[in-house]
Length: 541
Image 1 (cartoon, rainbow, N blue to C red):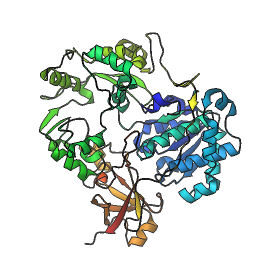
Image 2: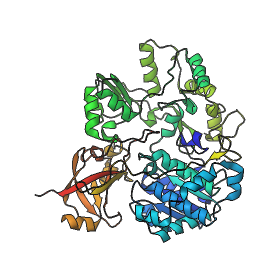
Image 3: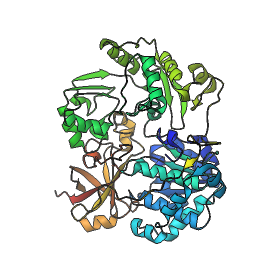
Image 4: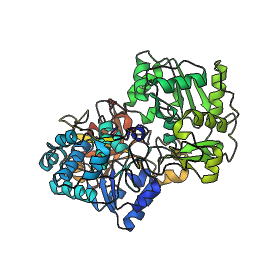
């Protein structure tokens, strides 16, 4: 993707978290950073105290948006119209980095031609964002000497998610804000060690280190190392697995540390799939909503009961040390997998522990080849790519050239979300997280102090919208989409755009993903969690 493919394919930050403090402009889009990544948000606040300009683009005036120098209440799903509009102004005003573009990129003229239709007037019609505000953002970002883009799932969880990420890469390259400290395109991962799981090959189209299953050389390397024949075609994503289960193409599912019956879109569809599958195994530390459908439950270990490594959002590989033994029959995940593999007759699973597994990984994965437990312990963590035992690691990427040589500008067309409000379903629903609960609440809703902070969900709605529905703050409403309905209390706030409502997805009592649509990005196959159409009615009595 735009010369940053190795990184954007992995979702990793081009730069380091600590570098954020030295940026002089921070562009936050699709990220409720203070709620979902508070430690990163603290770095942003340090930068702001040093004089950095903070731009926040979000349909909700979140806590970080309230701290912004420039806040843009962009409707969910309109990101590419907005980004193209910014870049149209930057090019028209000559604020782009012509030397960087000439020396380090290609495809600029075609990209530039595509921007012509995204005039401030057109973007204002599509997004509702005032042309002067668009210009203010463009000037602040383009004229900064060190501008950092920070984004999260508000960018990726759309049918245009891949295009959104490519366009952020376009913006960074257009202004020369990549390949140097305190700049770059910096996605924040959604859960701890999501980065590590992807690095290890936990994606359907790659082996460890993002070596593609369709490429012959890496496939042969892994076949030789593992003594097996490996598929040429990519596997299925989670959402595709559910469809395949209903169609009878997937007969069994093995779910580890995931709770799709709250986290996946269109939950009625997910429940049908879990009921239909012939054999369901769930490996977890609590009896989740998903585990209640399992034929077999394997008790895993929590973070304090494990040895191993974690790779964070800035590509830093760190050690994790076991503090206590797992209780009862619970075991560390690697041990369960090895025992299961051997019981099924597989060879090569006689590992003595996670360090031996990591050593195999390093032998087969160029970006991890220079990393070892000894180096991690001695140096406090290493950032990949780290290719040799004396490689210090890589705090920021693309210093001298991109992974493909020259960065490729990609012309992006704005496309509407899969489902927009209409006469029957007049509101746009977006979903997200709260600071006191994590993902589907499997752990945080077992913590009394966090439950004291927030013990029930609510629907954020603008007072003007509430007035039109005859609603008062705290009254119960039914929120319905074409896929399901939930009941929840209304919370009136001017911190959300009119016509848009927000529902956190942590709560089994009012699961937001009963409402969301399973339309997928055609490339990344990520569902459009962030946009769907709903109607709202007051619950009487």
